[in-house]
Image 1 (cartoon, rainbow, N blue to C red):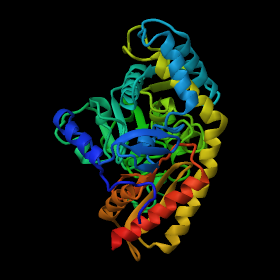
Image 2 (cartoon, rainbow, N blue to C red; image 1 turned 180 degrees about the vertical axis):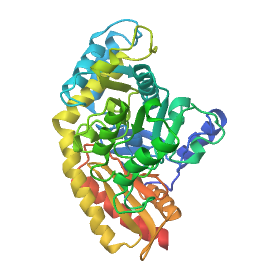
Image 3 (tube, rainbow, N blue to C red; image 1 turned 60 degrees about the horizontal axis):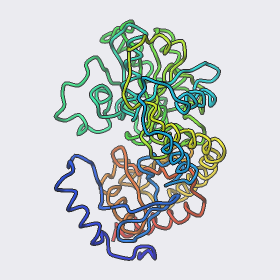
Image 4 (tube, helix red, strand yellow; image 1 turned 135 degrees about the vertical axis):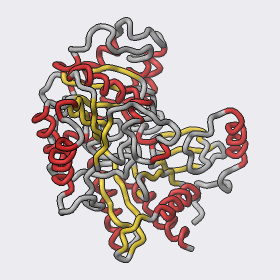
Length: 440
């Protein structure tokens, strides 16, 4: 396939020159998959430094929720920059207060009053959530889930288990974290058809009976839809059961919505699909449309227990980031959340139609525009096919489509929330053609 938008063989000379300069001065630790060097973007389209145009179905790892350089977001940032760039969280300013009010208005925890702590990233939001859970409960132990990704700083890294490479070389991380399986009916670890019930029974009847005193557990941290671990949607009833388990034992339920929040799933938060109210929620990624911002959101009764100086930072509530978040929330609530639901359903159906013709597609899953497509050996063999998945990601790049994988062999789709059916149709042509080329 020769895309009409790819003008030079990839990577082009300008991209190669930029990458060569990078290799001399930038850390090699970044997990880069293919040599895309960006020049600029608009909506769901991006261009590299050689003038090649791509359709972006990665959105900066689900960050560019309103597309690249949305004019309303750009204007909000520009207006804020004309006033001041920084004041520090030791003081007050209008946009920070308004963002706290705006978060309360979108009801992350239903009718429960909430308060927000503002920071710069998902990992910092998770760190704040863990500190709050320990502070409020007076307990020290915590539970996370295998396959989870919560960040790379030492506290959040203690929970991150989507790939062992993220922890390799950094032991010991924060102590007191116990991992349990994330329920996945497609790849069951326990006996029985309902993996959600099995995981709950494992926590209650095995872990709490033999290894981990429930009265010492401060919180359970979970992604309501697992991200890096494979875009896994938990079985019906699992999150409700986890909420009940936490209530029985006085444990705080923490939802990491860094990737799934802010309209990504067709609702403002993934938790809203199941009606489960956590005690604490973390946000980042799509909240600022590309600006670095994170939030710890908690029930007011919990966060107001923090005493002066118990937690803080320098850059939290930055005026430019708050402006971007306010514009993003308005756009998502006004139109893009609904678009994610409608176009996401269309995209999911297109993928499932393809699945009926393509035996190497094991499962298509997700909500809204958070969609995973898992590749397997096929013909009844559910063994993961990571090479096929990785080769498809690379081939799609050469054909003008930006993608990322997750889990062992899952292709994930997290485009800007403004994509159209026409964008989906174009992506499907590239996907099907690229898969055929990979097999040649």
